[in-house]
Image (cartoon, rainbow, N blue to C red; front, top):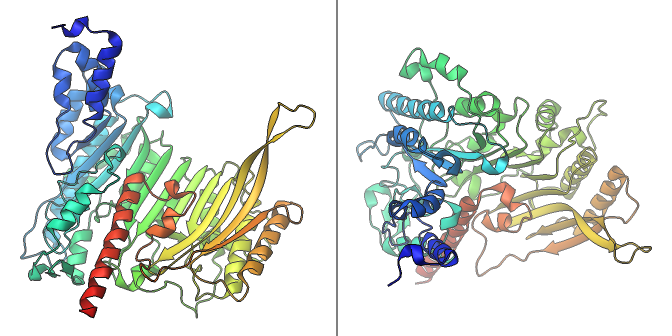
Length: 550
């Protein structure tokens, strides 16, 4: 039998790749642990290959931060790390308090745990060098959870510690683990926590506030001198910062502001997936607007504020537009948003900022402005607006889209813009796309040049006013005038998506899935979770319908 060293290099590489590809996950979809790390211990040849895979993506809690410092200090391991996820594990709680908001002592202990974990990690990362390019930079993700969050009123699969989809390479197109979890919980009966035969009743306000938490970032609470230490920390290795909507506990705004504007000077992009506040007036809040109060030093930003029918029934179960509420211009907020985003190359605002506020300076009814901002680098923009509903006046929607065209005239590098809205029973989107259309030069048949072909697309599940095609043509003509194009230069497409009576829309996912810029709206794992939540909502609707008929 031939020894390992006697095998040809090509065959050994094929074996390595086969072993690596068969262990792309930390867990299989039945919850069984997969151990790829052991292959690196076979011999030094195996170590060189497998350590690149083993250290590419790391997930740690506060107890493993010291191990990170020790393990990555050996050899080239630090250079292998591309993704690092800090999941701060907060203290557990029992049924005696699961229906109550956290008390003062619990809040204090959790704040100390969270603050210390973040500072300890950033102190380690501060010793890592600045990457030579973006490809070799580090993506840092932050989250916080209690192991008890999934054991009481909110038995969501994504909150469980055994949740298998931890990075995009682990995603299963067949949703095997979700279906297994759903099957196991189909007959879940836990009346004390609002579950009856697999059906969840709306939880009380205390339960919602418990899972939302009350985290603060307070270095002085851990140690009086820690605030000074934090002020001097600089982390050059991090080029992307992420917070996903997987957990409901909010990452403190003061921490994110520090990371964005001071601690991480090499930052190129930021994605913030969060949940709207679970209070009665949460629908009136812009939970992420604080990050836009100062000019951003990065090039890419995505703010995604989510909601669902269980946590935010007032927001999700009806249109967020009120017919009696006119578009009130807020030029002060609009100018702040515009000025502080003008150095970005891409941005996506979902619920966090409404397009009406962003484009207020450019509204047809706005007074003339002498010093309008210019976005010299902006290539892609996607933003939501509550105005895009069938309850809105058709001329209000038209004014919004005309304002967007006037703003686009101040965006010389713009390739794509999408304004959208979606929710239970409806979705709609306006899109401007500057497509690349290769053409052949008449003098040089073989030479190719790129011609930009502008296109406007309107699509919705509802009818926009008495004459939607005429409405979108007027918008297109306004865009042509604002951009200095000839009449008819923009191709206009109109597409009405018929709402299915058999499977009516239950969440925002169908609207997101139909966007050209959906990758900017939220990360791949969040899109995967949203797609399942739409399927689960459809299944719940079918079950409820069958029960009512029976």
